Amino acid sequence: MQELMQRRQEIVDAAHHLAQRGLVEGSAGNISCRFGEHYLVTATGARFTTITTDQVPLVDRDGNVIDGDVKPTSEMQMHISVYDETSAKAVVHTHSPYATALSLVLDEVPLIHYTQLTLGGSIKMVPYATFGTKKLADLVKKKILGQKGVILRGHGTICSGKDVAAAAENAELLEWVCKVYHIASQHGTPREMKPGEVVGVAAAATLKSYGTVQKSK
Ligand code: 13P
Image (cartoon, rainbow, N blue to C red):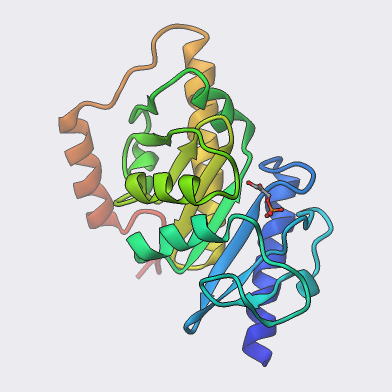
């Protein structure tokens, strides 16, 4: 029971953080994580600014409530698409403004910054479909393989990670890349990374354990 509460708290903390960072507004967005054979998910209608642990029900993959007394997110099927197609342990859906804006004018966000490689390279766009539908979930399924984040055209983003904090971090990174792309495009055509540059980053990251705090000795 203690672990269940801890996982719920992680979702609440991530929700508050993402709201504070401006990646969702109102009751937009939802978060989930695997919990054994079940899933902890934010309730439909929950507001990330004020969400509490009693608004994070435990559900099965069909959205039937196992523990809790509130209905799960309307995007349950979309989250399940990500779990089915990837090794994700947690999923975050946002309405990030820069990513959503770019989805209205681009077919993908090219690889412009090396940190994007952790998301899978260029950022793919999922065609538009109504929120909460099986159609949207099926469209996500087709684009998510090999990606830690994709953009839903005219809607928002869906990102994943090894835990809730990692999925939220990927959502922030995706939005940051879109912001950089937007700023650059005010001044010209953003330059894509060259294949040789990509190979160099992969080698350097492996060698230096990039992105981790390391002992000096
Ligand atoms: P829920 O409130 O059902 O989670 O839906 C919010 C949302 O962002 C739909 O895409």
